[in-house]
Length: 128
Length: 127
Image (cartoon, rainbow over all chains, first blue to last red; front, side):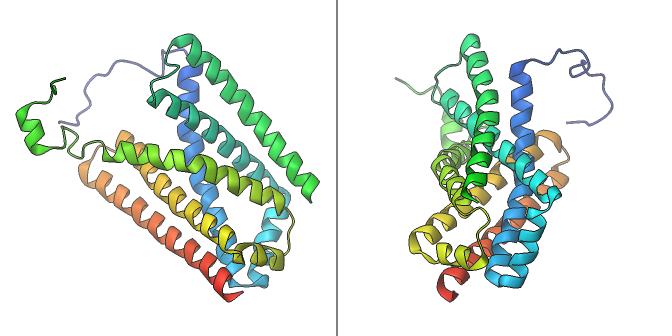
């Protein structure tokens, strides 16, 4: 297929964002964010296996305000991607594909992602 | 019900995407497996918030935790590779660049998976 600069219909510049498209791209964005966060997890694990000194470095970074910020964001990305992922699996099974249901489950996913993030962090702070 | 596939399609077996539904199905399976595994992982992290190195080592040394952690890591990196591949296929259209990027991502996920699983084993067996 020729890759020249052929004229294309406008899309992002004219289409109003909706819950459907917004959540869809957010699923992809959180996926990429989780990629990066999982590299952080890998660092943590490898440091734990290496010894107490390396582990202390990782824990120090994660305990800093910057590390905590990253962890909080990563938690939200994980909860969002998890909830929306389940929504995708429900669609794959053929259920809740009608527009009102798509919007309802969409809002549930948004609320659940924030709610679960808060729940996880409160539980973690209690456990400390 | 009679299949709607053409004889040529049935002979080739894999459809116009040339790889059938393997990638899609794999993504769904890893997604499904990750639901309980991720919940277990998050619960474990909560339970061990602020834990010392010794506590983490003791926790991972227990067979159940080591096995679940290895499963979580393996499935996560596989899911990560598949998902990232979908993104690359959507935005990179130059055949060689696309193939190179997908292969690199797969390679990186393999390296990370082996490195992290090795770390878990090292903790579990070495102490």
